[in-house]
Length: 348
Image (cartoon, rainbow, N blue to C red; front, top):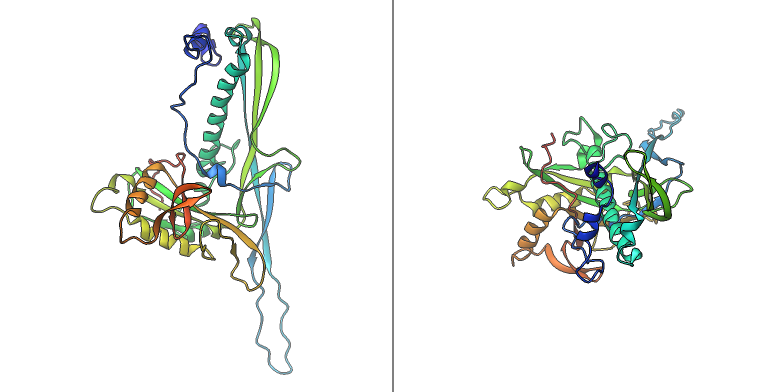
């Protein structure tokens, strides 16, 4: 039974592993941490539904007619459709035996070390779902980007017009994503009337139960994140898919620079530089479209940095973004997201 309890709750062995020789809580090196800068960039908007967000999109334009004298013209109208994006509820409870927490006399510091692990785990789950969440497989989650851009064939999905095939054919592929974050393009959502962001609530001391119904005093913490993704205009997200990571160092490596050029030209409007606002191509509409960012995993980021050192390359540069050195492509920041896998299957 000790093993069963220890798999979901902290034991004395866990406590001993987290305390230094002087009895203080050890500074834990989190070898499981990831870099998911996409969570820093996402724009969040309160949904207009209790469970998500409804978007009305224009699907057809009215057709005018050439009129002859003494002849009228038919009536015309535009057509629209409504798309509903739902939120998922990501929750977990932390329960720790009170005697374990109180052993070293610094219960707040000990509990904080445990809180950081939960927050890191939820961040990783959020970043992974943002790209790979599929409600057809896991209906309790929200729909991520990859299932919305699942093919390179426009006959199968309209979004395929913004998917570029980089030539990989096996199951060692990854993707680069170009996302324009904005209130009218792509953004995160949380249910109407709720609190946005990851919520952490210290519930204090509780009487807890073990696997056999026995009771003991402990501390309980509740973590909750109600979140989703709204893709309001699919034209403002581009996927460079089927990048075979096993060929990046060889003579047949995919040309990442050309791929990024093609990807940026798929956007309805061209970003001028890092943090530069875009507007629609309609004259004087005054609508800000958002902020363009490029996302890739650490493998792709490494090869982009290598290419940025080539003197003949004037598009990839090392620049400053939010006060930090970052690789930029045509002034658009390239951000690291460890949630992007190197084991994506080929999409066709």
